[in-house]
Image 1 (cartoon, rainbow, N blue to C red):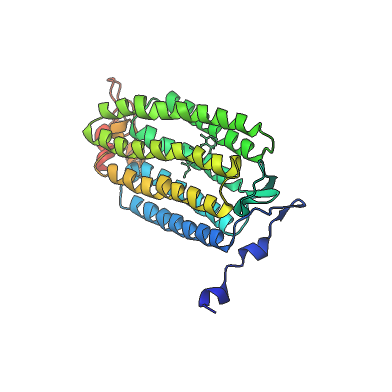
Image 2 (image 1 turned 45 degrees about the vertical axis):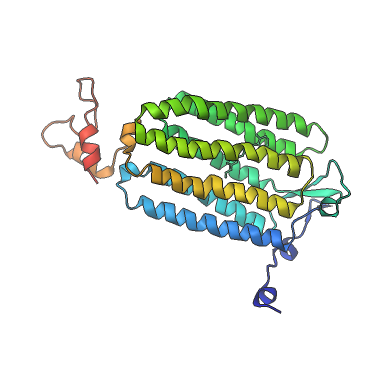
Amino acid sequence: MSIFEKRGNGALQANGFTVNGATSDIHITTHGSDWYWAVCAVMTVATFAFAGLAQTKPRQQRIFHYITAAITMVAAIAYFTMGSNLGFTPIAANPQRNNPKVHGVYRQIFYVRYIDWVITTPLLLMDLLLTAAMPWPTVLFVILVDEVMIITGLVGALVYSNYKWGYFAFGNAALFYIVYVLVWEARKHANAMGKDVGKAFLICGSLTTVLWILYPIAWGVCEGGNVISPDSEAVFYGILDLFAKPVFGALLIWGHRGIDPARLGLHIHDYDEKDQAIHGNGHSNGANGYDGNGTNGNVGNVATTV
Ligand code: RET
């Protein structure tokens, strides 16, 4: 008996497959649970790395670090939940299949995935759209459409009848619009912000576009069509999430290394700079105010105050 067998992963026995009286007979095995734990570990390490890197920057330049650390933090907890064999509900499989890997009546549907995504996909879009310095009404609208995409995916996953494909269609229409904004409007906008911004956006925007198109394919063969096993589902979504969150985040933060967020219209104030404004150095408009000449008086100060 190996050390792993002795100490073991007891999540499946501890938490079981029965929820509200129904039991998932198409469910993850210990391998699936182990994999979820491994992804949880990567998300946790990434969170500390991104939060730690934030400390190496002045406070006015941490926005992308904080957004990205928040994304992996939420994912780490979602993966903790799935590794623990929690955050799911049994849904009657439709269609039922003869393949022994997906043979059964109730498929284990992890709704916690969607709780993760409803929080993290808007943050990923903020990372990208703020990089491209998109107008805030566009950012808000794209995020709203993104919530439509995730919630329709969740509702569809919980529906037994073929009406689930109706929700799937709404979700894909939403994704289509998001991809359009990323590959067309935001790309043009990012290029106009400078070569370095254009390059950072191109790398992260392309990665996102390719990955996000793979998610509905995963949904189609997992929650939708009951084609691949819950263990394979864990690997499929897990690999996508690893690229969409820690790998994306590392590339984004790397891309921002020489870019002051103030250049993207993100003028952020720091406490000591505000103190300076309050205590003053002779005239009241210097540090954080509109200077009355049609320009913003803080532009010079912000970059120099740490
Ligand atoms: C669903 C099903 C409905 C149709 C579509 C979907 C797309 C989901 C996407 C999820 C992205 C998740 C990410 C998570 C972060 O790691 C909801 C699967 C289009 C694009 C990036």
